[in-house]
Length: 111
Image 1 (cartoon, rainbow, N blue to C red):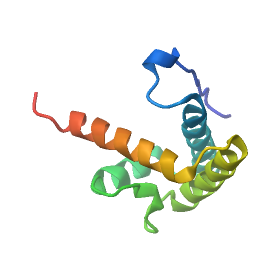
Image 2 (image 1 turned 30 degrees about the vertical axis):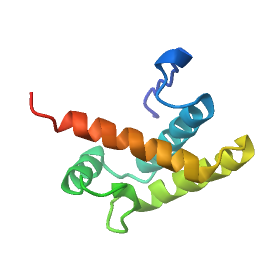
Image 3 (image 1 turned 60 degrees about the vertical axis):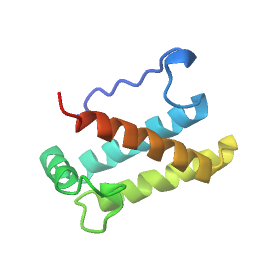
C-alpha cells in the first residue's frame, strides 16, 4: 500500500520558489519517492547515504547512491516538465542550489 503523501503550497509571499519551480520540486520528490518505494530502496539507506555525502551537490546523482536510478528518472521527468512550463533549467537549477545552500548553512549553524 502506498503511504499518504501530502503536497501543499503556501501563499506566494511565503514561497521559496516561483509557482512553476515549486511544482517542479514537488513532482521530482513525488516521482523519486514513488520509485524508491516501488524498487524496495529503504529510507534508512537513503538517509544514511545522504548524510555520508552531505557535501555533494546532489547525493542522488552520485552513481553509488542506493536511489541513483530513481533520482535520475525523477530528474528526467522534472526537466521535461520544466520545458513544458517554459522554465529555463539553468535558472531553476541556480535557484534551487541557492536555496539548498541557505538551508544547509542554517542546519549547520551553531545554536
